[in-house]
Image (cartoon, rainbow, N blue to C red; front, side, top):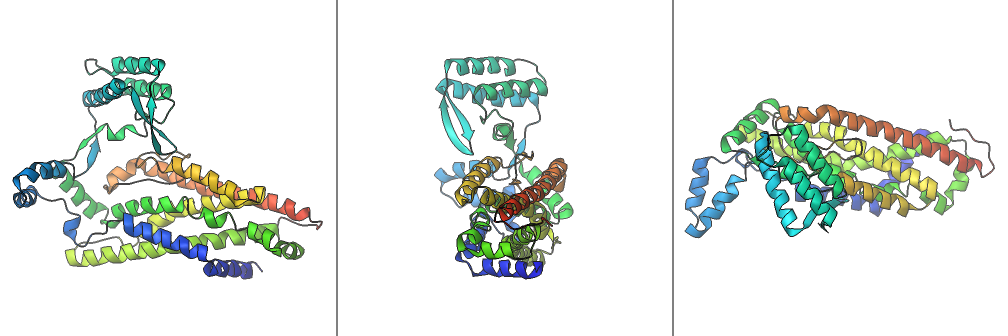
Length: 394
């Protein structure tokens, strides 16, 4: 009975227009966001000679702009020198204080906040504490910024989550080449690119499945099929779980398609460039990073459906959670983030700084999803019992 219900549910998804819209959204997002290289030269940093050669082809008035653009093209790295941090942050704070307007993120949207007299004083206190003229520790520096962020109501550029762009510097060509060679050797290229792939795909997995998941249990209530289901000898656990698993399998399909396309593209590149790649990398990060997100979104949609019998509640809550989780591109992997953002192709040594925290995060959402589904089963079983039939969870 369970296998038949699973297959029937899977076939239902394959017959609905909403599901194919979901697939189209995922695939379109993939092609619009992932910059797939045509050759190894698209990945390899441009040498100084190549930059100069390109510059010489441009009119004189465009060369300075081109040179400035190339200085930023190799990426960024975090500042490590405390004096450099003090100076960069002090200058940024000085500009915001001068305009009396602070940039604050609320639900991933940038909002310009006019500073109150109290907040102006908080700025002055923080600037005095981190002044480049003073010798302070990293701990004192962080504490001063945290206090200022709190005075601004949270979500400011002084929050640990958002200050990275201020406290970073350009990578040199030599450093970029070093990273490139490490990625080829240790990551076999596709592991680094697979993390970026999972970052982009996680954005879609964190929101769009809710438009299907929120209706999974509701549609039987609306169609009248629930009366028939309640009368059959199938447990609430088997009924809810098979629907949940069928939805997860259906949701994974477009991510397998895109992962396969990326693997094919990089395998062709590897053949032309005579380099070695990890053929399982895109699938691996899809499984480890994207699937737990799909599990959580689907579980949340189903429990809200059985609680309120209205999908709009699940969609609104999911959208708010999505906004808070996509805001940080790198380095924020606490359990409040159900989407993993890792928007940079970096060597494995850099990734390993965050790997343990990411594994804990993913494990947490797998367990949380299972707990939510069990709660869904309990609630659904009570609803079935109210029809007047003696039922069992198992």
